[in-house]
Length: 79
View 1 (tube, rainbow, N blue to C red):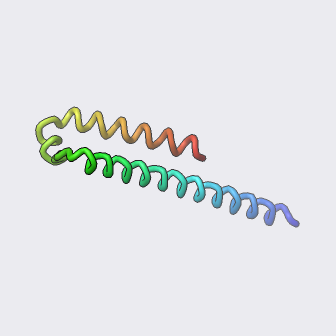
View 2 (view 1 turned 90 degrees about the vertical axis):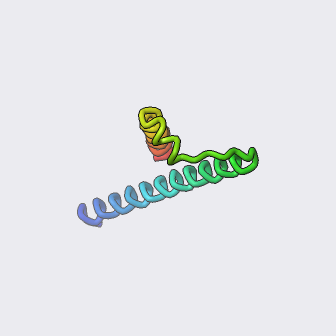
């Protein structure tokens, strides 16, 4: 095996591992979303997200930041 073939193989392996990690993270986020959605349905909570964002834009931005941070941490730990 030449150096080029070895490098290509290593890169392919790393890309496959990255894809698998991304797939796991995506599935974890989907599962969490589904669980949260089911919880809200079970509790009978009537929550209008658009109205909340109009009333409390800074709180919505902070929540979006928090969700993004948690998702980044999950992706970092899975990979």
